[in-house]
Image 1 (cartoon, rainbow, N blue to C red):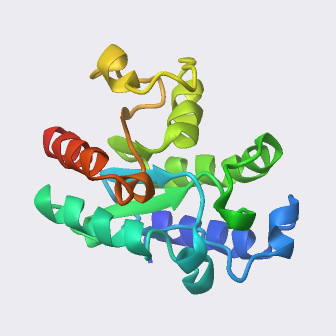
Image 2: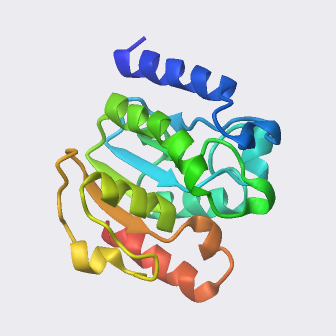
Length: 188
């Protein structure tokens, strides 16, 4: 096994046993993330949904099907990337992540990023975008719907390019958002 794979497996094991926040009490399965340990591209969502909680894998519901379509259009397969989330357990009723939950889970994400060393991180949602940008000392406000426009091609001291995007779960709800998401993935 490779060093990144060993590291990711150890992190995943810790995540499945984690009790740092109350979300562990209601989860069916923790969702550590999955994919290529040597991925050049890492996708980071916000939190697992219902089907992710059931299966213990990221982006396996309707949003995952849409994500697979976007990846195929970009000529990328899941085998080439790593997919994770800010939170590793599903929040009740798919509510937004709470600050204390983000604080409890993001050390795992930071270690995953360090192990993988991606060249490109695609954030899928406002919480993942805000977190990754803050790691580079860039603070965005929640109402800024297009941080990419103002921060296009900016490289961080973390050694990767960030590409914020709308989460596939939101994109499945509205046709216009879905069309825009297709365009954004094609230009990444």
